[in-house]
Length: 222
Ligand SMILES: Nc1ncnc2c1ncn2[C@@H]1O[C@H](COP(=O)(O)OP(=O)(O)O)[C@@H](O)[C@H]1O
Ligand SMILES: [Mg+2]
Image 1: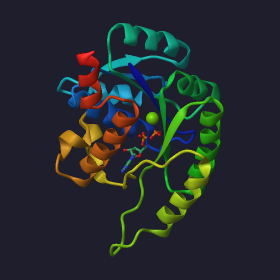
Image 2 (image 1 turned 30 degrees about the horizontal axis):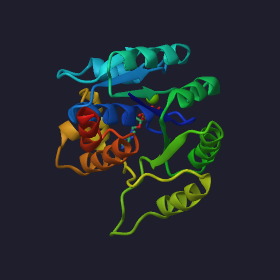
Image 3 (image 1 turned 30 degrees about the vertical axis):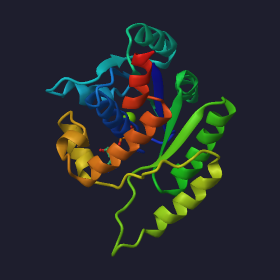
Image 4 (image 1 turned 45 degrees about the horizontal axis):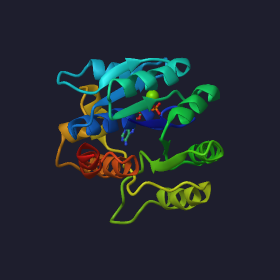
């Protein structure tokens, strides 16, 4: 089993949006998925509880119980555990990083988010963990031109010592509307731009975590 920790020391960056969408992407791709919500705000839990269709198993937990949760999830033959984390305290974020095989650092294209991600990236590297930075809530292109905030953010994030994800996520109403119905953007608007972004991000995460169809077929073949 692989563990993906979705982190950002800033509230509102998009941790819950990405945790839910990636856990659902994994579930829809046939991966046995558990979403561990260790944020006392329980936003991810609110989303999944509002879901009509089947979905990832929800575990309402805390940082203190995360090691044990991973042990049990592994024992129950899950393929993936996604951990939705709080912005603080730091110790809880560090615990999530420690149990993770891959950390997804969520960052809006703003000065304060970038500064926070730079510190988180350093912590991830110090703990010897793999990380991927994803830009979220990027404003749309205007007349085909990338807004300077996005260009500058991408440049600054290059110096964080962790790679940027192959795709950034734009600010899109589909992310807000789908979650209000307990659904991923993949289900909400399968042919939409938000679904395309999540599809590409999931594909990169699955590849890095060796959770692609080909990886699983190889495991089954022994
Ligand atoms: N790519 C996006 N486009 C539009 N709205 C977004 C996007 N990502 C997040 N949001 C919105 O931003 C707010 C904060 O997102 P959330 O996932 O709760 O952040 P966090 O868990 O980091 O606090 C929510 O209202 C959510 O719907
Ligand atoms: Mg959240």
